[in-house]
Image (cartoon, rainbow, N blue to C red; front, side, top):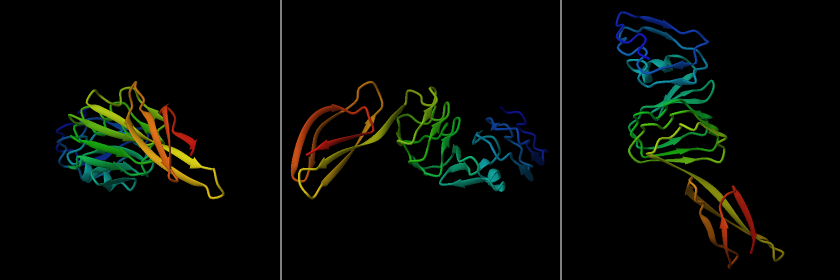
Length: 212
């Protein structure tokens, strides 16, 4: 962190392939940079690492800046978000959310598309006053420190009702979005093919099937 801050005479930066992380303000104030060579496999990089990170990182072919997001296309990590939008949709091509990716971003809602598998530590720490993060079913691993107390997380489960009572089966799907906490919501009613069933099933799995 701040390792080379304000070294304005520094013109060339070539980082070894073994480096996987660049911390806050590592090269901040290095306004004379003319050459920047990054390792292909960065798994985290602060938005404040360089004087203008969104300008310098894409000089390297594996790094792409779009919709305020810096993405390492080599390992499909979202390194940081520095855009102005408060409602953000993370594309399906992203597989992981990096350390402090949304730090100081002031977002309101972040929706992770299906395909995102991991969320690193402190990914959403200090990301806004009241932040809602909508998780996909593809999530496999979340660091325990990924969110702070200002963040509420939710996930969408799909509930299925299937009519098998005649020769023409009908099906009905309904999605439930709910916050992840100690209290699971209940499925109250499901409708399909002009009929209805009632149930008090707790939503604790990703899918259910009922016969109407």
